[in-house]
Amino acid sequence: MSNYIKLKRGLNIKLAGEADKTISTLPLPETVAIKPHNFIGVTPKLLVKQGDEVQAGTPLFYDKGNEAVKFCSPVSGEVIEIIRGEKRKLLEVRILADKETTYVDFDRVNPANLTRDAIIQAILNSGVWPFIRQRPFGIIANPREKPKSVFISAFDTNPLAPDNDFIIEQDGEDFETGLDALQKLTDGKVHLNIHADKTALKVFTGAKGVQINTFSGPHPAGNVGVQIHHIDAVNKGEVVWCVYPQDVVVIGRLFNKGRFNASRVIALTGSHVEKPKYYTTIVGGAIKNIIADGGLKNGKNRIISGNVLTGKQISADGYLDFYDTQITVIPEGDEPEFMGWLMPGLSKFSISRSFFSWLTPNKKYDLNTNLHGEERPFVVTGEYEKVFPMDIYPVQLLKSILVEDIELMEKLGIYEVVEEDFALCEFICTSKIESQDIIQRGLELVRKEMG
Image 1: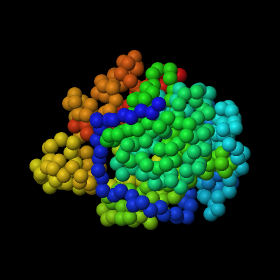
Image 2 (image 1 turned 90 degrees about the horizontal axis):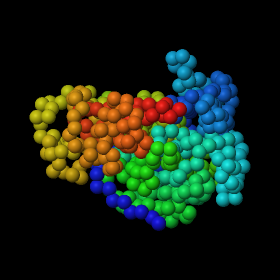
Image 3 (image 1 turned 90 degrees about the vertical axis):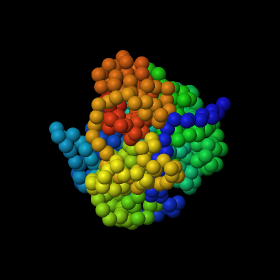
Image 4 (image 1 turned 120 degrees about the horizontal axis):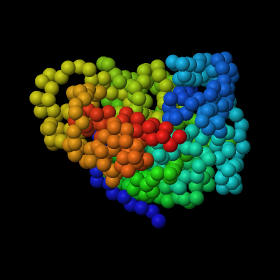
């Protein structure tokens, strides 16, 4: 039985710079970087050295805590640099990509004909397993556990987020095969969640063997954590797995083509991009060619791997983070403002009526990174609850983390959230509290306590 869930709490942030519905196919990035810090809780053990030749699907490192989980090269080429930090901590493995990719050959097989254990082994051996993550904690799923359900959010409500209907349309067959494989991994349901107004692709709306749930409402309706909360909430001792739509395609390609093909379509977005549009690239690929093709406007820019709420700042010659499908470029915002808050603020976004911009609800904004103030005492204002569509007390949860009260954190719902679920709270916070960092600390504390 499907569910229809209407969310009223939340906030859509309308920014200028949405990607045009065109896909540019540039040459493969010259270099690719796989960064262990993209994977929460992973302690990497390196399997290659500088100068080694690799193929797409060759293991680069594995997780010491779970040796079955391998992280493979998404391209063929030469390992040109291994970057380490303090105490020789592995930071990046960089690969100079061949012009033509060669692949490690894996078996082509219909997952419907395989057992659960055989599917898991195939995904582990190929390096595809890191695309499957779990709640709680937002970490890579443990293949030794069995989830009570699997969740896929077919839509993204983050600012300027890529349109999955547009992206997945060309990969429908691989997406369906990926769903077939995921159905074998749980005794429960595979939940494919669509948006009432945004999702129309037949691959999503007509998917077989899954439960299709419909959501409506503002961001964060597209966050998989919000969807899990309303359909199959995670309690202590329970596990739910989740996969992004493009990563379902990667799983499907493995079984249909016998390859670890981690190519993906990303959106170059933001008010300081001259020609925002979609690009075909690779997981961990260098972004400089994409930035050069899209063009940046004059001024000091902030380049973000991901969206403006949860993404990480990178340089123009940096690399796409492993799970990201979006690059956003906005103005840095380090210029002084004439008269500041005394102006009517027609170009300033506000969730209250502090500025006259509330008179133009459909206006798209050219926002920058200016905080408009510094951190202040953490007071209860009731603002968090307006944008937080879970039956959880967000302020109380954050304060329980600050005092490191694990028992209270558990009672207040720490197992149901990850950092992205508090991104809107951080955005609208009048006290400038870094809510996402606090949630990250809380999750790490609980995870270590559980061993």
